[in-house]
Amino acid sequence: MGEAAIDPTIAQLRQAMERVSTTAGGAAPRVDPDVGPGEDGATSRTLAVPEALIGLFPHGGLVRGSVVSASGAGSLLLSMIAASSGAGAQVAVVGLPRLSMLAAAEMGADLDRIALVSDPGADPLQIATVLLDGMDLVVLELRGMAVPPSRAKVLAARARRNSAVLLVVGGQWPGAAAHLAARVSGYRTSSAGPSDARRCGYGRIDGWDLAVSLRSRSRPPRSAVLAAGRGSRAGAGTL
Image (cartoon, rainbow, N blue to C red; front, side):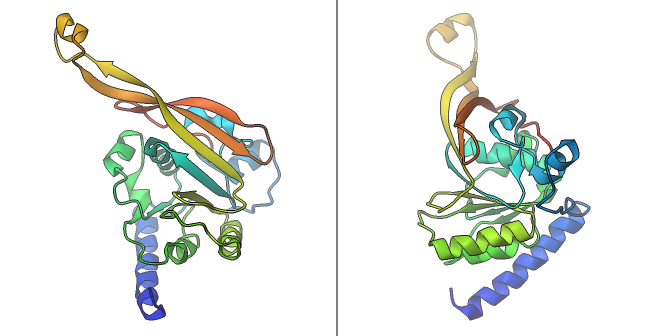
């Protein structure tokens, strides 16, 4: 994507961010990323995560100003988006056209607070750079890219400056503060009919459990189980 093509796209992104902010009643308050820990500090420094995952994070949520990578089941992304937007954060999702916003809404997402950029063009990093100026959480699909350290530093600095969180998937990001991984560990089913049908293996999958692990610089790896699917809501940590 050349410069002439990027400029109109960036203008459209800024308009989209303004619409999200207006529709949702304004962005979540920005904070000083250097606020210290403590009850008030922990609340202002983090974005919400699903209730089941609060214990994985050193500060109980996604620390503003950080870059986090994720891999595995897409339900993990949906639950993170649902928890953050449901708690008042403005969220942008870049390069993930198949991610179901209906499923996110069923998990508790506030769709008025979510901006979708299904096709970011040839340079999704440029699009993410712009979005970090106005959104609290930017979820970015890297399309298998190994991001050069020089560009990673630019985006990490932008996230710090704006007290935002960049959550990257589908590639390699040097120097991420933490890495989330999720895999399906079990399914929940309901009957499709009488008991003899259940014995024959008929029924409907209503939900599934995700085994989620977090590796970070500041503590040993931790893991938790997150329920997803029909009737599962992300809940929230602090915003």
